[in-house]
Image (cartoon, rainbow, N blue to C red; front, side, top):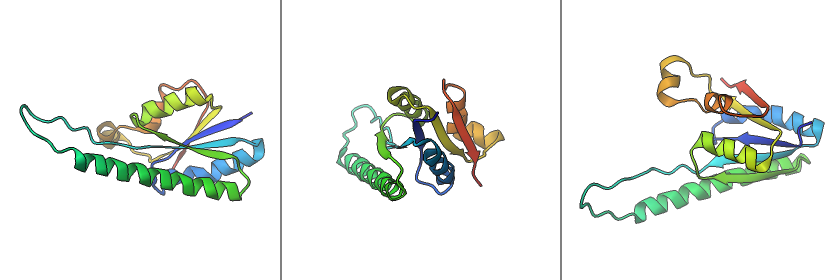
Length: 147
C-alpha cells in the first residue's frame, strides 16, 4: 500500500514526533522511508553600488548543508538498525515546494509529517508547512500534531 513514505523534517524534536508512526507503517508495509530536510539559505540582495563579500554567506551555507547531511545520516543509520529501508534527501527550494516536488519526483505513496499546531495569528505570520502541503498535495498525507 505505502511503498515509499516521504518524511519531511526540520531537525526539531517536534518534527520527529512523526517517526514512531512512520516506523510502524514502514515495518507493516515494507516501505522505503525517504527522510527529507531543506537547506535553507538567507537571500541577500545588496544595495545599489554596494560591495559585498559573499564568502561569509557561502561558509554559513556550507555549514548548514553539512549539518543537514549529518542529521539525515544519523536518521538513516537508526532506521537501518531497525531493518527499515531508507535514504536521505537534501532539498534546496522553499520547504513546501520541496515537499511537493520530491513527492512527485520520487512517486511517494504517503507524506508523513508533524504539525506544530499553530493557529490564528502565529499561523498567518509564520505560515504552516502542513497547511501548505495539505492544500496542494495530490496524494495521501499523514499529519500528527506534536506538542
